[in-house]
Image (cartoon, rainbow, N blue to C red; front, side, top):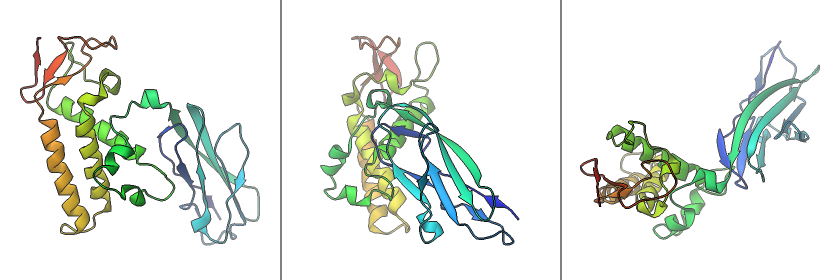
Length: 234
């Protein structure tokens, strides 16, 4: 007999952003007694919340954290004996530290009803903006666009996000529609292709100002030519 508690959650989350702490993949072996109680605790210092419901599809807790920090999420499962627990970690950061390059409002200028497609357990696309940010920084690294000391750029080096806002907006829209598509010819696939093309156009702008010396100040000489991947002195 065995109980296998599972909890799934986002690794990184912005404070005051809705998220889902998901224990629906919890299961027991066939020779184990039926589950009688499932509780989730979103913070080690907090209290358990009963999420048992009528089926395993109810075993989740939608939550948001008002303060940045590291949190331990716990799921507790009970059958006919002592409860079994499983823990996971979630890092909550401030909007300033997140430094996302685009916003949901900017997405709505292209797709009025875009928020209708936010996945269950969330109320924003901040996770997709964060994915776009990761892709942008990875692109710079792949193109060998590095700091003078050879290290890769990080999000904090993008001091003026206006420089990458269009790129990030279209990258995020492409990510969203890629996730919605289940056929190469459906409307979501068409939209994903459209926004990838717009992304490519925004990305090919002549120059991008980045904080080359990591002093959080943009100087006139800190300009990268994206097309040639060379630093431009001005």
